[in-house]
Amino acid sequence: MIDIATETVLALTEAAAVLPPLRGRKRPSYSTLWRWATKGINGVRLETVKIGGTSFTSREALQRFVAALNAEPTPAPVHVDRRPADEAQARLREKGFTPA
Image (cartoon, rainbow, N blue to C red; front, side):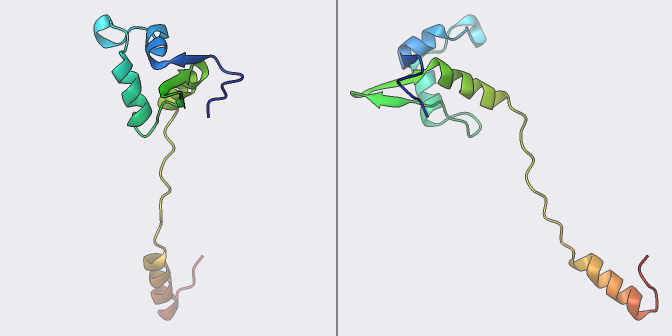
Protein backbone atom coordinates (compact mmCIF):
# COMPACT_ATOMS: atom_id res chain seq x y z
CA MET A 1 0.00 0.00 0.00
CA ILE A 2 1.35 3.37 -0.97
CA ASP A 3 1.66 5.88 1.88
CA ILE A 4 1.47 9.28 0.19
CA ALA A 5 2.82 10.97 3.32
CA THR A 6 6.13 9.07 3.37
CA GLU A 7 6.72 7.78 -0.17
CA THR A 8 7.86 9.64 -3.28
CA VAL A 9 4.63 9.76 -5.28
CA LEU A 10 4.83 9.92 -9.09
CA ALA A 11 2.21 10.07 -11.81
CA LEU A 12 2.46 7.01 -14.06
CA THR A 13 3.92 9.17 -16.83
CA GLU A 14 6.63 10.40 -14.42
CA ALA A 15 7.27 6.88 -13.18
CA ALA A 16 7.79 5.68 -16.75
CA ALA A 17 10.45 8.36 -17.18
CA VAL A 18 12.47 7.29 -14.12
CA LEU A 19 12.68 3.63 -15.15
CA PRO A 20 15.65 2.39 -17.17
CA PRO A 21 15.21 1.51 -20.84
CA LEU A 22 13.74 -1.93 -21.47
CA ARG A 23 13.93 -4.07 -24.59
CA GLY A 24 14.45 -2.05 -27.71
CA ARG A 25 16.31 0.60 -25.68
CA LYS A 26 13.11 2.53 -24.99
CA ARG A 27 11.71 3.51 -21.64
CA PRO A 28 8.39 1.88 -20.76
CA SER A 29 5.35 3.89 -21.77
CA TYR A 30 2.47 5.06 -19.62
CA SER A 31 0.36 2.20 -21.00
CA THR A 32 2.99 -0.33 -19.89
CA LEU A 33 2.81 0.94 -16.30
CA TRP A 34 -0.99 0.99 -16.53
CA ARG A 35 -0.89 -2.68 -17.63
CA TRP A 36 1.48 -3.54 -14.75
CA ALA A 37 -1.00 -1.89 -12.35
CA THR A 38 -4.17 -3.46 -13.75
CA LYS A 39 -3.13 -6.87 -15.09
CA GLY A 40 0.27 -7.32 -13.50
CA ILE A 41 3.06 -9.70 -14.45
CA ASN A 42 2.98 -13.29 -13.16
CA GLY A 43 0.41 -12.33 -10.53
CA VAL A 44 2.38 -9.30 -9.29
CA ARG A 45 0.75 -5.88 -9.71
CA LEU A 46 2.25 -2.43 -9.46
CA GLU A 47 0.70 -0.55 -6.55
CA THR A 48 -1.17 2.63 -7.45
CA VAL A 49 -3.40 5.21 -5.81
CA LYS A 50 -5.93 7.48 -7.46
CA ILE A 51 -5.92 11.14 -6.54
CA GLY A 52 -8.46 13.31 -8.31
CA GLY A 53 -8.91 10.84 -11.16
CA THR A 54 -5.15 10.53 -11.84
CA SER A 55 -3.27 7.31 -11.12
CA PHE A 56 -0.07 7.57 -9.14
CA THR A 57 2.56 5.12 -8.00
CA SER A 58 5.73 5.70 -5.98
CA ARG A 59 9.43 5.04 -6.31
CA GLU A 60 9.09 2.66 -3.37
CA ALA A 61 6.16 0.83 -5.03
CA LEU A 62 8.27 0.42 -8.18
CA GLN A 63 11.04 -1.05 -6.02
CA ARG A 64 8.61 -3.48 -4.34
CA PHE A 65 7.21 -4.45 -7.76
CA VAL A 66 10.66 -5.21 -9.18
CA ALA A 67 11.69 -7.07 -6.02
CA ALA A 68 8.54 -9.22 -6.15
CA LEU A 69 9.13 -10.05 -9.81
CA ASN A 70 12.68 -11.15 -9.02
CA ALA A 71 11.87 -13.10 -5.85
CA GLU A 72 12.38 -16.84 -5.78
CA PRO A 73 9.07 -18.58 -6.47
CA THR A 74 7.60 -20.40 -3.52
CA PRO A 75 6.96 -24.03 -4.40
CA ALA A 76 3.40 -25.23 -4.23
CA PRO A 77 2.68 -27.55 -1.30
CA VAL A 78 2.83 -31.20 -2.26
CA HIS A 79 0.00 -33.43 -1.10
CA VAL A 80 1.11 -36.97 -0.40
CA ASP A 81 -1.57 -39.64 -0.44
CA ARG A 82 -0.67 -42.00 2.41
CA ARG A 83 -3.44 -44.51 1.69
CA PRO A 84 -1.45 -46.79 -0.66
CA ALA A 85 1.43 -46.99 1.82
CA ASP A 86 -0.95 -47.65 4.73
CA GLU A 87 -2.75 -50.35 2.75
CA ALA A 88 0.56 -52.00 1.84
CA GLN A 89 1.65 -52.03 5.49
CA ALA A 90 -1.70 -53.56 6.49
CA ARG A 91 -1.25 -56.36 3.90
CA LEU A 92 2.28 -57.03 5.20
CA ARG A 93 0.97 -57.25 8.78
CA GLU A 94 -1.68 -59.75 7.63
CA LYS A 95 1.10 -61.92 6.22
CA GLY A 96 3.03 -61.78 9.47
CA PHE A 97 5.59 -59.13 8.61
CA THR A 98 6.11 -56.31 11.09
CA PRO A 99 7.22 -52.86 9.94
CA ALA A 100 10.74 -51.91 10.93
